Length: 253
View 1 (cartoon, one colour):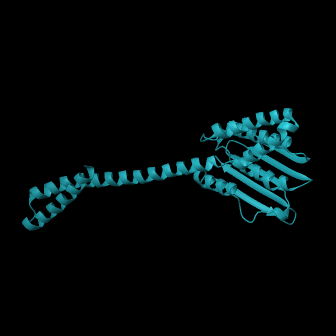
View 2 (cartoon, one colour; view 1 turned 120 degrees about the vertical axis):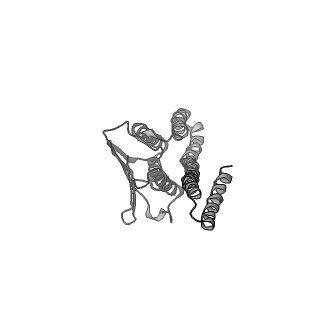
View 3 (cartoon, one colour; view 1 turned 180 degrees about the vertical axis):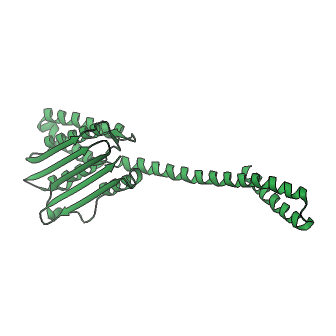
């Protein structure tokens, strides 16, 4: 109905112009034209506004859908590995298996329920990563040099959930798992009222270096583009000579 009225006004205005040319500068026609034009201008502007709003709304919905899909991809590799690991512990050490199950359930609860939220506090995200590390300490049968240092002056700052965990997971997946001894994972996290900085270093076996970035890193980059456009910095450095991988992620809030 709106489009029909719009085009009716367009053709009507064109007809008035033709009539003015045919019958001369009739005062009546000129008055009608000057009254008609503002109405036509209003309808055109309103139509353009609605079309623009519709396009932006569609893009926003598409971005939300993509973001939800990306969130659902976080951590599946880790949970599958842990379930396989638990299977072996059930008969060998039932007590430890129970502890692992409880720790894993807490991580899964956070990943499912908090991961659906738009933002979580830095304190919650920090606690989640600490539990993740503790679960890995229980899982492996080898000594691992794990350090997690924090300098957080603003615990209540909110950020998008499950961003840093991808980098932490990769440190264990591509580093610790492929090293028999002397494995290390060093994490630093700082946050104030304006910015959050996350840095992680781990050693790895250069022979086991993947040929291309995994799904996790691609997922992280896309989520950062959607949520923190022009407000983030992600630097990944793989030193194959010394076998040290460094990832630095900064978010401006």
